[in-house]
Image 1 (tube, rainbow, N blue to C red):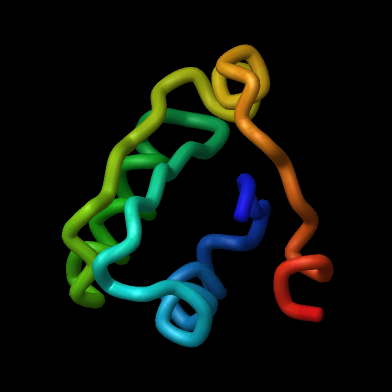
Image 2: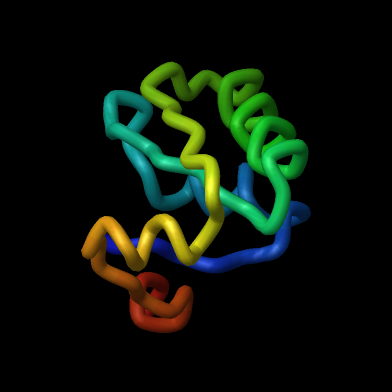
Length: 75
């Protein structure tokens, strides 16, 4: 699974319904503050393998990582 864009409000419910707790999860957002908040929400939900990517989507793309839409992940 590549990067999945979603609103912060649905992040935890999506993760709980889709991702194993042992999975590596990389978080990024428009700001480093939003990234930290999203990572904190997931940690409080029980995910421990969280990495925060500074630089947002541009940094993700520059690293050559894959991208997916949420509809392709849920379908």
